[in-house]
Amino acid sequence: MKFDVTLLSFDLGDIPAYARAAEALGFAGFWLAETQSDPFLGLALAAEHTQTIDLGTAIAVAFARSPTVTAMMAWNIGRLANGRFHLGLGSQVKAHNVLRYGVKWEKPIKKMRETTEAIRAVWHCWQTGAPLDYVGEFFKLQLMTPFFNPGPIAQPNIPIYISAVNEQMLRLAGETADGVMLHALHSVPYIEEYALPHIKDGLARRGLGRDDFQMVTAVFAIPTDEPEYAAWAKAHAQQQISFYLSTPAYRVLADLHGWHDTAAQLSQMARTGQWHAMPALITDEILDVIAVQGTWAELPGIIAGKYGRLLDRVSYYLPFIPGQNDAGWQASIRAFHQLAA
Image 1 (cartoon, rainbow, N blue to C red):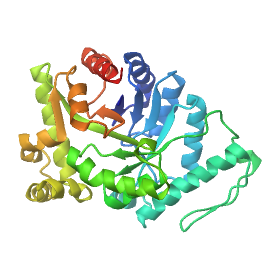
Image 2: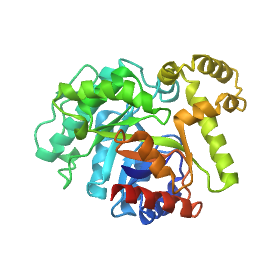
Image 3: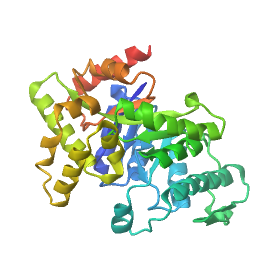
């Protein structure tokens, strides 16, 4: 199991220092989310200022960009990073696509399939010189002149990961992607009983097995070394979990664990703007299912014991700021390395 760091928000000016620090500490991967800044811009900077650490989007919003635009950004970073770049794509929910990005919400499963196929078609054209010829329901790509062709790169097999929560997107990830990015709002029963069977159905359709596929996620972690930070981390986890459980798109976890009433109440509170009161509904029982608690040094063993071989890459759902909690991060990194030895 590889131990990564994921930044959910960031300032572009900080990225060189953050990426160098993450590499120096020994993280396996450095991932950027698309929240307040463009992850591709950040990862271009990270590629320039690092040598060995993996880099990836966690995630980039797929439908807000044309496949060719996404292919171009990934290809250029892939060239700059010399094979260390991983492309994580997510659909986002309908409201954000329509009201924040101003794009249509249409057949998201089929459109995600075409998006990944079209991106790979563009890459194939650039790498081999073959004509660009991809025609689907949503995209028609049949023009690539030499002036707009960046040409081949040394490491052209850029992995594509699809963010998935529900049945059809999980199956699509198995069918078309190199891995899946599971939401931090998950549990072991959700992975074992729900996500993995659908993923395996998709893998079987192209003759692949679990060993051919990467399972990636963030985990709500509560380091307990220092009482003040432990209290903050617990409150942080409760706040984030309450927000996600209020969202209908993530209702599958509530259904699986019998948290229907809590999820419904959270949704009502979110509609009326009661954000500060929502975390109180996240009980210790819910935290025990979703989060992990222990010292920085203990957390990797707790995660390994909890998940076993279910996950291939994991990060903590905690802010990473160089110079803050470095000793704790190093303790977790060392413990993950020992587990892998």
